[in-house]
Image (cartoon, rainbow, N blue to C red; front, side):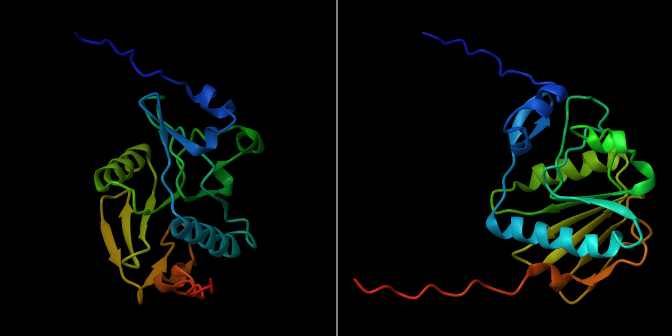
Length: 196
């Protein structure tokens, strides 16, 4: 005996925007896709938001967004991604666009911080989609190896290790930090044994 399964439900961008828990999902080909994060990747993403805000806010260079802000800037209109960190130059966003549930323009910088459950091919697909949408600079941050892969709109790629300088290039002029500065204060302290 064979069973028939219903096709998975498709969602629109507007449906995702009003879902109570919508910020926990991305939209891929109209289907909800859960976001995978770890404590470490979340910490590094938060730290990077702070570092970038410290650079961008004094001169109002760019808006810096954490991982709950989504981008629906893709040609098929059935896709929304939420980079772990993103930046949009201030002159590119109006107040009305900021009030909307998601952006319809690509970020200038998109950052993906890898988690243990991230699949390499999924990360590569997302990078390709960002580039096709017009994202100028992408950082893929690997907390375990303490490296950053750089992808640029012109097709060039860079690779940085902990001792190297991470630059905002022509996207965020003047921004610099050591790659090692992204990775926090080291391993968490060990938990003392409890007596029973």
